[in-house]
Image (tube, rainbow, N blue to C red):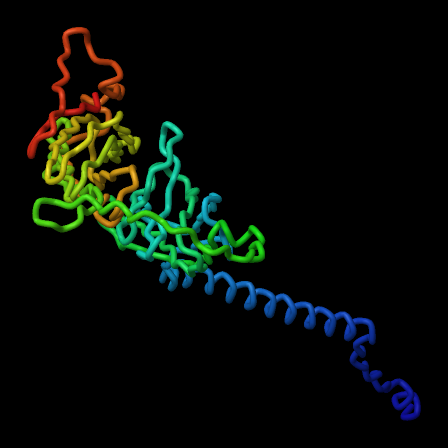
Length: 349
């Protein structure tokens, strides 16, 4: 009986925990590595985006104009000056070069004639192109290293910017081989040279020298502008026929080119008035395009502030017409006399 009870008592089997398979461990390690790679890539991408954002927030540190010119140029052959600049406000560009003895730059005018650019003065460049073609004219025998500058002048508010580059200007004769000197023959007797004409005081006459200055530039509330300037011959001889051009501060940057002007006697001057429409704030400039003894006084300019009430297009649909090419039949043009003071009034519309 007792043996029957003992045989009936059974011990329950102990269940063992399942072991993780090797494949599951490998998959877990691979997934963890992929997660780390994704996190690192995201941090690098976020750093690049932040650097670009900070750069755009604080802007560029270098606001200078990048000017490009050829390394060398020859007198009488045009060269191209180009530049790069990201302007944040509207404005105009100007060309500037240092004064050097016997050196001058010229640029093509609207009618194809070459206009002289005065040295040491900012010459306003019309249009929106960031390049200008200029022709160097060098009268000396030695080459010159000439710094050329481009200036950005804001129309209203903003910061003025400037950039420079240097070009070597060589005389035109440097390309022609110099002939070998030939034996100098014995000079024959020469007559006495003719004395130089002199003034009543006994001093030799100085060559003609035209100078220009801006008298006044006004703009009314309807965008109609009036510019008055004075051209005077401060030299000792008559100037002969001359020309001038004027850049008007209009919406399209209109350039007025004068017809042939009568000769000015020594100390004589003429006051000219240009009337134009669609005026806005900017720079009015006038330059004498005929070369004379002194080119530094052949250019003058003045800033113009148009009234804020003028809106583009208001009263400004009139097209430009240049007188005296289209005078009405009853229009009278005063004849310019050689006198200490004479005046005429060319019109731009």
